[in-house]
Each structure stands twice: as C-alpha cells, then as structure tokens.
Length: 79
Figure 1: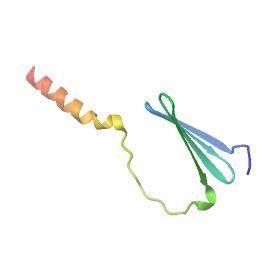
Figure 2 (figure 1 turned 180 degrees about the vertical axis):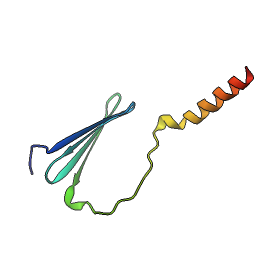
Figure 3 (figure 1 turned 30 degrees about the vertical axis):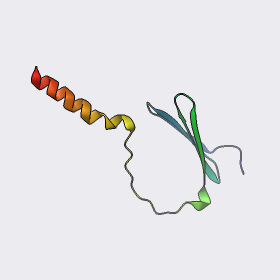
Figure 4 (figure 1 turned 135 degrees about the vertical axis):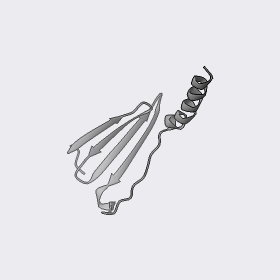
C-alpha cells in the first residue's frame, strides 16, 4: 500500500469537517464533529462499481428551518 496521497479534498460545514484522501488503491474518509467525535472509513477502489444512484442529504439544522420560517411569518402577520 502506498503512503503518499495522490490528492486530498476537505469539506467544512457548520457541524462536521470531512477530509477525503485519495491513494492509488483506496480512499480514506475522515470526519470530525464538535467536540470530540471522530469517524474514519477506508474504501478500497477495487470494490467500487461503475453504477451510481443519487441520494439527498439533509442536514439536521435544516430540519428546524421550516418551523422557524412559520413562526416568523406568524409573528410578522400578528404585528
């Protein structure tokens, strides 16, 4: 297994930071949440298939956005 990465990609969101590291034979995914939660997954490139499917990821903070908009609209209408 090679030790030097070919490429890296970092994604920083409000609640999580994800780092993707590409090697010749694998991809290493590391995630960190505040304060101390960590996750690491290694995906072997030989196990990947050429087929894909779309998924929608909704973050937890968006769950409350509808309620906040509704409460804001009601309070605006009441004023």
